[in-house]
Length: 430
Image 1: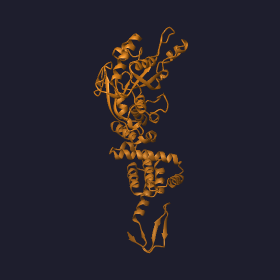
Image 2: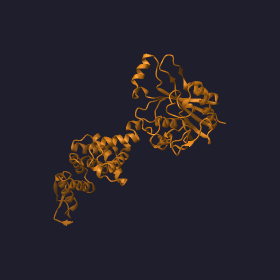
Image 3: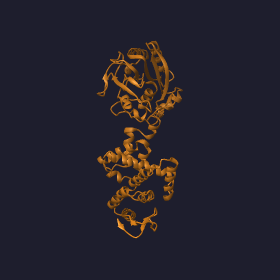
Image 4: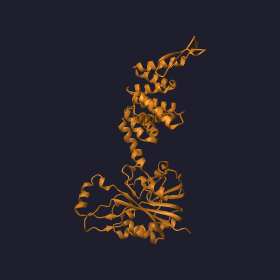
């Protein structure tokens, strides 16, 4: 430091003032350095120099008033504007962390927003974006391509709320493979793997009517059919014990495992710690064991779920006697064998979930079969007692090519089967 006869200081507006009340006056080289840094930042044009200055400001500038001005200056630049605006707002958030009083904290943030004419809700959005970028950096993933991404990418990330960091990590990995990827392409790939934020917000339903317009867990391309994973999540949440053995006895593509492994997103405070097993007559994954559900399981279970092939609707999708059954009486006889075998596989107080739709032909002369009700009778006769039911939309009216069937349903006054019933039964304690 250089000694002088009086101390000069820089106020929050960047004005140099004299302080005549000090006995050991000096000029802070750090403050002068910061002011030169800000002046250079406001005037620089060349991108590489701009990036270097932005990183220096993030490291050196500690006055929130200066940082917020920089955040709004940088927002007008392309490329790099959206990236550094978010990082600078995250920096502001960190600078305000010492304010423990929430009202005072919000007041300080609001005053900073007023300084640059920005609504506080937008500032909070930029803070979410900036902290998501920090997540990428903490994962030691290159943010070079993210730095030049347009604002839309960070807006997509912000909409994922507590998963914004995961979103940008995924985006950075996609950029590594394809630097020309657009925000729309990246978002489409994210939704294909993870579903949209709408799915994340309503996984667990508060009532017995379950409709999932934006399924989070999508069916695999190599498997012909799969129920939405949200059905497993809700069935586990409401009817499974927190510890014990849980089984999907007709596992199909293994959706049950995907949902259970992803339980942090839906279990809330339940902290499930289940031992899970998957079985199927024709396993298509190495973690699924081969087993005919008409025979008792090789293990005893506290919770069993089955989504059997649907009568009259599955013979073109799956192999096996249930799927191929042409007559309803034959189908029920096979389903009876399954229910009896699974009842024997339940531990005392164990629960069996059976997921089935009714069957309706399109023409007046076709019969109606109340498959869930008949399965109910089979379960009661097997010694179980019914405890609850949920009703699940199949969204068949929105399927591609449904217009003709919808019109036929109205013409023939034959309602289409558009609802599945999840009946839940319990085995008495011994």
